Image (cartoon, rainbow, N blue to C red):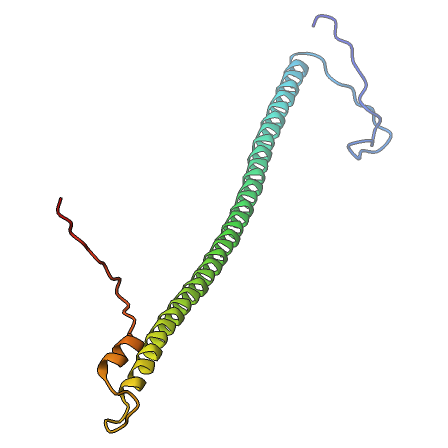
Length: 174
């Protein structure tokens, strides 16, 4: 700078703690320009440091938010998995209950069928036994009794009914 004016400094004692009576003036010249350049450089460095810190803080915050989101998603996925496991268990219990019910019904029906079959078989056996007993009662007449004089009379009057079907085949020649 070619024309340098002296500039007064701030009022005495404002920043430096000097007594109020002394006046100081700034110097002009190369020292002042170097100081100004140095001050601007420091301001730029401070701005750069501040920007770096802001970017670093942003990265840290983004990382933390990502962790929170992943944690929330993990918790939600685990809860969904737990609900699915519970639902599968409920469905499995229902299927098992249905199977047991169907098995009980089947067992009851089978027992009823077996019981009916045994009753029918018993009735048939009893019926046959009763017929044989009725027939044998007639044959057990004492020998010296005169109730039935001949065997022919017995055959004509009381016949034992056979359980087997009878077939009469006649062969005719032409």
